[in-house]
Image: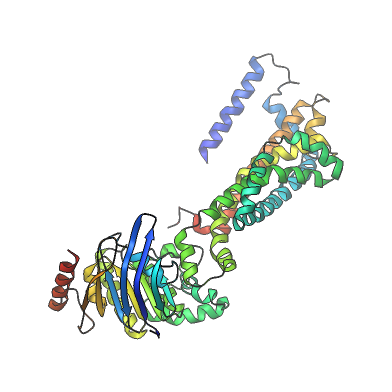
Amino acid sequence: MIAPLVLLALFIGGWELYTRVSDVDAFILPAPHEVAQSLYDDRSLLLSNLSVTAQEVGLGIVLALLVGVLLAFALHLSPPLRRAAYPLLVSSQAVPFVILAPLLVFWFGFSVFAKLAIVVIVCFFPVVVTTLDALRNVDPELLKLMRTLDASRWQTLRMVEAPAALPAALSGAKIAVAVAVIGAVFAEYTGSEKGLGHLLLTSTPQLETARAWAATVVLALFAVALFSALGVAQRVLVPWTRKDRT
Amino acid sequence: MHVDGGVQLTRIHRAFGPVTALADLSLSVAPREVVAVVGPSGCGKSTLLEIVCGLQRPDAGTCETAPAVLMPQRDSLLPWLSAIDNAALARRVAGDNREAARAKARPLFAHFGLDGFESARTDELSGGMRQRVAFLRTLLSGKPVLCLDEPFGALDAITRGEMQAWLSDALAEEPRTVLLVTHDVEEACVLADRVCVMSPRPGRIVAELDVALERPRRATDPAVVALRERALEALR
């Protein structure tokens, strides 16, 4: 607990020092105390915009987890489908979402669905890959055991493969958290009326750089909170994977 | 031959690519007989059990057997289930709901030295206890033939001795047809009615020794020791 705080203090101290000794303009890089001031002054503005972005990211991650896990199971159960669809999935990640965003806005307008779609598109991939890998790497001894007990394909899936793959799906979601926040911010850039991304976009031309940085700090804190929440979910949902148990 | 709780293997042949695992192997196990198969590592013992359990098909020869269940080499407990739910897995697969499955496992837990460990996580169990749970799971499948693949191979010598006595008692109370594969000749002599010695690959039965000794037996009984020597002689 001490180490990250020390590192953070050093980082903020260095930043503060830099803004004082250099002649960098406050419109380009505000000092930490100005950002802190904005965090306090604009707190209701930041919070109301955070709730919009948080919904997009939170719902998006849950949807990505669902889509990713279902897709992984489908690919696992059907090798022809896996061979056909896997290259497409990989290539889908090479498509810059800049090029998709206008289309999504065209389809869904400025509604939450356009943002959700972008978050899901950037997030489902790590979930699919980690889950599918886990499904394919289930201990063959366990599969043998289920066969010798005359288990059906469905029973093996439900009683062995699904619980064995669940930890990997959650790890995939943890990886997805970072890109989810970027995805939501970008989605708000392309077309929105509210959200932290929208606030970022509008603060900069208004020369409210401290507010833009404050929004960034809130985004970063939110990502950390989400990551921790998934850590808690892991402890609750897949307690058998914890190594530190006595 | 029609098998009623027994196993009849006739001239089994099984190869994996260029490697012949089993060649011309014949073996019969009478209902409620305990037969131990001993042999050097890699002689095809596990393949033999998988053929009996229907997990593999022989390339040639016939395998006639009553329904057989495999207890795999490692205990293969599911870490997301409690001890009792692991034992009850066989009943869940057979279609019982959770409570009915547990109700069938519970008396066995009490009876076979696992009392009080019903809700334990698998990593809280000792090696010997894990094997007991795995054995109860195998028993609860309800199949008349049990195929045990090196059931105590991963245990230390003291625990292994205890578990052999435990298994001997358990089979006295719940008699089954048992095909036990082991590389431990002593274990075979303590537990089995008959010891079959397998040759190195390609595996086949090269000697059969009847163990006409009273139970419970101890590894140090002179008759067991003498038998062990004969089996070891056959292995050479």
